[in-house]
Image 1 (cartoon, rainbow, N blue to C red):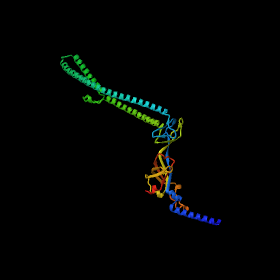
Image 2: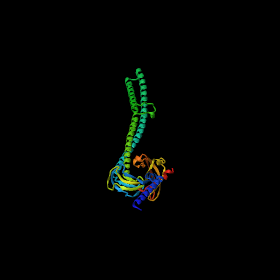
Image 3: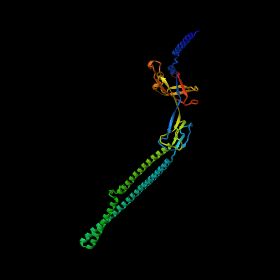
Image 4: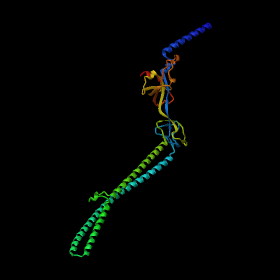
Length: 370
């Protein structure tokens, strides 16, 4: 066979193979677009959390964990120096104790004042009763002196007694009248403007009322001290919260990926100090709009790892339009038949023998069965 015949034969064979391959691709769909539709793969990714001391800073005195260490929610990760906060808390506690002592002293003084006022009121009532009796006695003496004076006046008119005796009776009458006036003034002084109703226990004495008003005003001072105490308690709560924040704890189960600060360093507020890998893992796949239309958030999807064929059950967290680079390009002129892609994020429970970074494959069956 000549060289030319061999070349023709090889050309024919190549053409036949190419033709058969085209036929197979047409029926089986092994072009890039068909393969992209048939299988979807994503990288299993664990969410990472940057941890920082919330609004507090200081020198780190305890680095409680190491890199790659597994931690549980609530485990202590790092601790900042609390000396300044402890001193401030002690100062506020002392101030609160001082205010409590002032409140107790003022409360005691007010109670004693009310008791003394009640006692003074009763003493004044008894003095009023005594003065009222003294006034009655003075009025009785005056009445007797007046009767005696009237008799002596009649006797003097008839010449039965001398003028000097009448003058003595007149003097006694004047003294009795002066005594009545004096006793009346003393009673009015004890009443201090109150109307004498003859019922002593119902009298409203101005001096006693003023004493009670003064004691009532002192209650306002007590309220002021109580407000000061509340303000101090708020400051104490703020300091206690600040002290709690000086201890950084794990917000969830996970693994320490990287320590961004070391023991002895000065840490600024809200500065990331630790990178934590959580137990929340997910992977993203990109589907055509026809495939995405069959899915909804909350649907279950089962995939398997490429490395060890481990089945992984997951739940769709969200479905959103993917960036343009993920669109499926059809092999037609000017891309007129391009298909829009959708990003599907699937969250799974972390499993043994499955670690972040593995590739998870989801076949078309997971979507066509819906």
